[in-house]
Image 1 (spheres, rainbow, N blue to C red):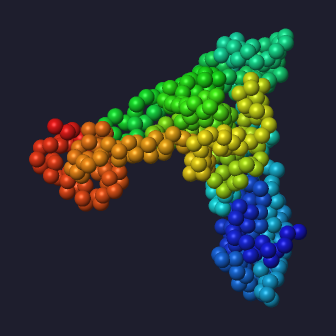
Image 2 (cartoon, rainbow, N blue to C red):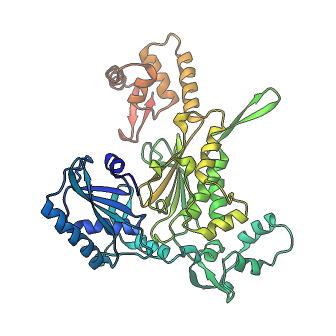
Image 3 (cartoon, rainbow, N blue to C red):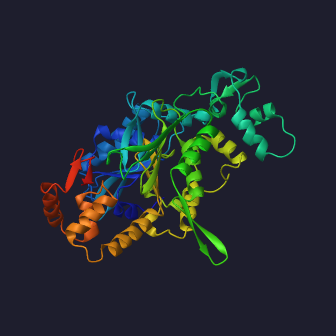
Length: 456
């Protein structure tokens, strides 16, 4: 039994909820707890965790009513006990995790993070699938072996597996196909044909720090479809094409200085492919590369409903949404079959020469999507170097001459950026720019938001 006083003194969290009085709508919370990891509801405790107590008549009534309401609604029993602190009485309702999905009047609730939410659509489908002990990738599709080819899969399969192997037998042992030739969803995802149409990836190299900040928004883009291996290989090629890898010579060795550690990118892409929810039929994975960062987004939050941004990233237990996909990627040596992908990404960054704590990869989920932000290791360094070069170029130039120099070097520079570079107030920059425009020395081409400067 947990220390009640200690629990009361803690904040509300994923397994604890405080309520001053009972209302029947709190059956939704009990449903949410039972469908998640279980939890405890305290009645007679305010939002600050202070025990305010319950009237003796209320105590007696609730000790009878709450168990009856829970049993009537869900067909389960919960421990409902009267507790005391500082001579004030409160009720503790202990809810255990249910083996089967529970609903309240046809609605399913789930406790995720510190909130209770109703689950519908793909989330409800995934929840019910999970409760049966299976997974989306293990489910049998309506596609048979004779409708599919596996050229991309075979190529990597032959490259990494030694000895004599019967490919058709391995399709069965890898759980990609049943003995009668019926394919599992995992088998369909690894096939060359594009039968699961939401299994695709959009890749974009944006011009600037956001999706709409210059005359030309996108510098490069690519839509990838087909086998999961095609998605992985083509996405890696896109990242390599749209990032750079510098180097410097250090005594007798060459030190690589990549924008992004390749190991971190590989791990991020593999995680996106094997951990995404393939039940979201209108969703897709995507890579967005900006000047200063790369964001890999995939449908589906953490499989257990937790909020990754609140976890110790080096000690996150592995819970697989698609265990067959993970197993096959491991067999093909595209990921390690043990250990946390989060830890590998963090380690890859920390091993780089230009890494600082401000460039630590960021992991975030909103419950519907998962976001991995990888920071460009060279962006801040190059920006500092450029500032130093411009400062050296300035010499004895006046503010007016300096601005013209900066406009020629970067026609899309903003007045805020000029203010930062020159160490002048925005008001001072505006006054000089106004003079240059009125004199016809500088002209604005395009709109304020996405235009550029032309020095005549």
